[in-house]
Length: 196
Image (tube, rainbow, N blue to C red; front, top):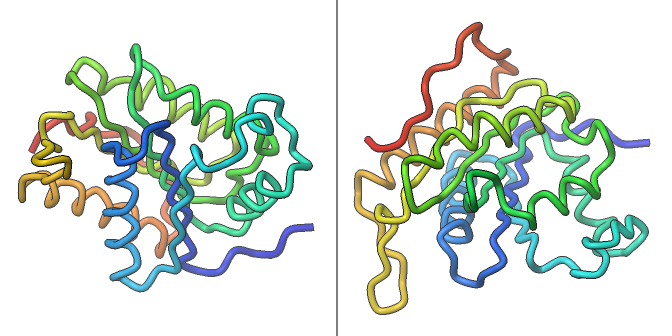
């Protein structure tokens, strides 16, 4: 039997298979922002979980058990994915498939994504949002899409423009307010933000 999540506990889940990827950078940045406003925040990189356990949905694997427990104990979830072929990553799909059916029940969820083209922005609304809702999320806040060009690499490091950091910060603020207020979804969602 699960215990009630602690107020302000957030699990940031990034699901890129690559070390140093844009979604991983975004995960670290969002974790820092939420920690700065007093949330107990943990960043889970799905690529660090045992591949065989994920592929075979071996839910008794100790690392997968710990990851599922982290989801269960969180009040809020931030799901970060690269967009490949107009859908969220297969790595995130494997992780979500390993979770119990109503693993997001009562939680506030925010989807975030990176991608090479603004054409991918609707993937958040048409693929990831419905999954969170069917898994019982209390509130799926409007997510945010960051185009790859807005997270350029210089000498191997991601160096975002100030406007990119500000736009992500604004999205995180909306999530944080919803987390604290236990807000319910608005009747009509605003369009996804592609660029500031």
